[in-house]
Figure 1 (spheres, rainbow over the protein chains, first blue to last red):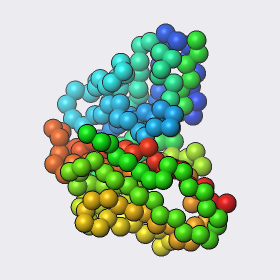
Figure 2 (cartoon, rainbow over the protein chains, first blue to last red):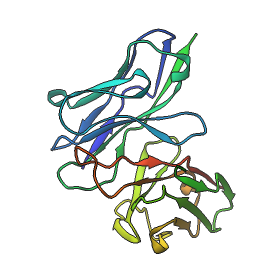
Figure 3 (cartoon, chains in turn brown, orange):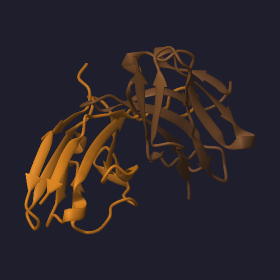
Figure 4 (spheres, rainbow over the protein chains, first blue to last red):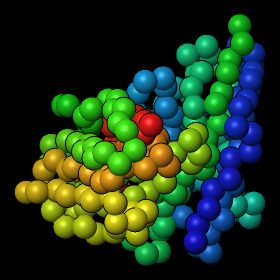
Length: 115
Length: 118
């Protein structure tokens, strides 16, 4: 069975600082990988995804993530945090080899951005 | 184009009562999914419809939960009778049938229904 681990349920950074949110997955076959963001009182929005090809993927709002197979990781980064980035971020995976569509999520990381 | 909508946004019920949640997917999306997040834990998959058929219901916790998708359009999720541990946020998502490049269909999520069982 797949599992996703997000280190740190809460991360606080200063405005303008680097954002690094960690995600590791456990799967016998490298899965599809996703980062979702949830702003207050809104649904989950896809930030970026890795399905195939280039391992460094760019998403919306200046975020990017790199798939590292050897480390089974898909960490999310942004060079300079903005106040509007404050939200909860979820890493998720989906099986690539079975065609099963269900997403398996990590427990989420709440990002605070200090002025 | 309207996104995924869910109704109600909040529901507060007593233990033992019945609640029905509704999800309207994006028009033309054959795939519909239900997920829930309980007590600030991870979001967990409940089930997946393709049109009106249940493709995968491996995440349904027990037989108190009944999901339907009549006519392959909107879906309902009924909890009967509700228990305290059913409290949480129930999310619905939808996706197209045909895969995007790379073979994966993006799932678009609704805002969720917050269910509180007292």
